[in-house]
Amino acid sequence: MSSWAGYAWLREHFNLPVTQKLSILSQIGRDRKTSFQDGVRYETYRPNSKPDDIPLAHLAFALKHEGIHLELLSHAFKSFDKQALIDWIASEPTGQYTRKAGFLYEWLTGNILQAPEMSGNYRNLLDPNQVVAADIPIKNSRWRINDNLPGTPYFCPIIRRTELLDLIDDYNLAERLQNIEDDYGTDLMTRSAVWLTIRESRASFAIEHEGDQKSKIHRFALAMGRYCGQIEAPLSIGALTEIQDSILGTSTIRHGLRQSPVFVGSGTQEMGSYVHYVAPDANDVEPMLKGLQTFMEKTRNVNPVIRAAVASFGFVFIHPMADGNGRISRFLINDTLRRDSAIPAPLLLPISSTITKSTVSRTRYDKILEAYSRPMMAKTANDIRFGSRTAYPDGVVSDFEFSGNDTLRPAWRYPDLTEQSEYLFHVIHETIEYEMRHQIQSHHSYIEARDKVKDFLEGPDEHIDRIMRSVERNEGQISNKLKNEFPVLNDSTIGEPIKDVINAHTANRPVRQNYDPGAEIEALLNGVLGISPLKKT
Image (cartoon, rainbow, N blue to C red; front, side, top):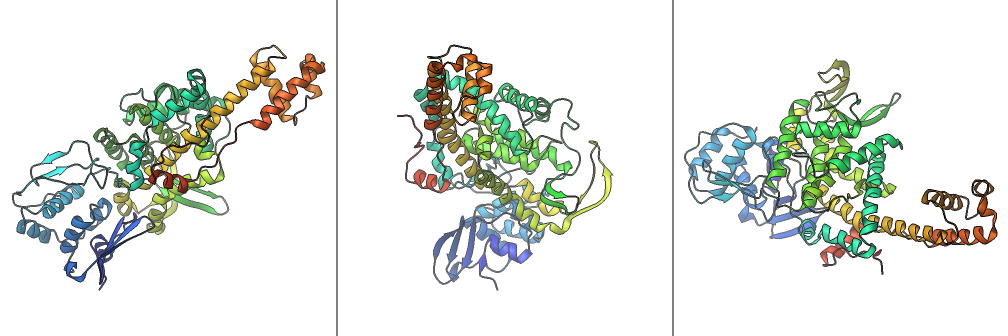
C-alpha cells in the first residue's frame, strides 16, 4: 500500500487527472520531518498519524494538514460515495472538516447533500495566512462556514502566500516611482510617460510576433492612455469589446467573445500543428470571466501586484476574445496597478518591453505560461484531433477538435497562479528599478548631449536629432550626405566639436544592468528592498 496520505493518496487511489502540482505532499514514515524541494513541501508523519485507507479519512487528513486543492477535489468528488459522505457528515455535525467537506462538495458539484443541520462555531474555509482569500467572508449558515473563497465555482484562482509574495507588501511601487522622479525631475518623468507608453505598445506587438506597424502601435498606445484605470468594470463583456475595438480597430475580422474552440500552437504545412495550450470551451467563457470579475471585486485589499497577475494571467488562460487576448492581458496589468493607486497617472509601466528585452527574458515569459499549460497538454494529448471543418457562430471555420474538456475543466476553473504572481513581481521590479531608470537615464543623457550640440549649432530639435543619429550610425563621422543636407557642418569649427560631443555621448551612455531573479530573491529575503544599481548619484 502506498505511503502517501491526504491529497496524494486520493490522487493515486482514484487515478485523478490532476494537472497542477500539490504544494504539500504528505507521506507516512518512521520519523516526523519536513523538507522542501522544487517549491513543494514534503511532510512525513509517524505511523500513528496514518489515516485509514478509505477516501473520507484521507479527505479529512488533507483538509486538516494540506489546505484546499480545488482542482483535485473537483475531480475526487465525482468518485466519492455520496451516501458515505453524508453519513460521515451526520456523524460529526460540529466537526470543522466535515462541514468544510460538505460545503466544498456542494460548491464544486452543484449537488445538494441531504445532510442534517450543522452546529459549532463558524470557521474560515480558507486560511488567509496560507492563501489569498476574499476581503470579507460570507457567512454560510447551512454549513456554519465563513466562505472566503475569492471567486466563484466557475473561476476561482488560488494564490499561495509564499515567502516572496508576503515580502512584496513592503515594496511600494508608487514610492519607488517617486524616487525616480526625485532623481530626475517631474518634467523628465512626465515626458518619459508618453515615450514609455509607446515603448510598451511596440513591445507588446513584438510579443505577438507582429512587425513594427506604426498605426497599430500608436492605436494601442492611445488605448492604453485612454482606458487604463478609467473604464468601469474592465472585465465586463461590453468593456472588453470596447477595449478590443480600440486596440485592434473596428475593422478587425472578429471582435467580442469567441464562440469557437481555440488553441495556442505552432506548426507548418509540412510538419502539422503543435498545440501548446487548449483554451476553455467557448460555452464556459462568459461564466469564467464573471468569476474573474468576482475575484477582482472580492480582493480589493490584496497586494496590487497579485491582483494584476490574476487579472492578466487569468484572462489570457481563459482566452475569451476572438482576437487580441495577449495585448488585452498585458493592458490589464497596468489597468489594475493604476486602479489600485500603485502607479500614478499618466505613467504606464513598460512591462512588455521588459519581457522582450532579451532571449532570456522572453524564455522566462514562455516558461511561466508553460508552467500552467504543459501539464494540461500532457494529460490530454490524445484528446486533440484535426478532423472535419466546422463553422461556428462567430464566423470561425476550424478543423480543431478537442474531447478533453471534462478533464481540464477543473484546472481551467481553479488555476494556481502563485508562480505567475511571483513572476510578475520580478518583471515589475525589473521594469522600475532597471529598465525605467536605464531608459530615463538614457533619455536624460541624450537631452544633455543635444543641448551641448546646440552650443555650436542652433536649430529645431528634429534637425539636431537627425544630425546626432547620422553621426552615431556612421561610426562617429559626419558623412558627406549629412554635410550636403546641413552645409554648415563643412565648417570644421562647428562640425568637429559637434562630432566630439556626439561621440562622447555614445561612449558614456548609461549601460543596462542585467537582472538576476535569484539574486533579487536573496536580497528581498534579506530585507534589502528595491536597491537599484542604476540609482543616480
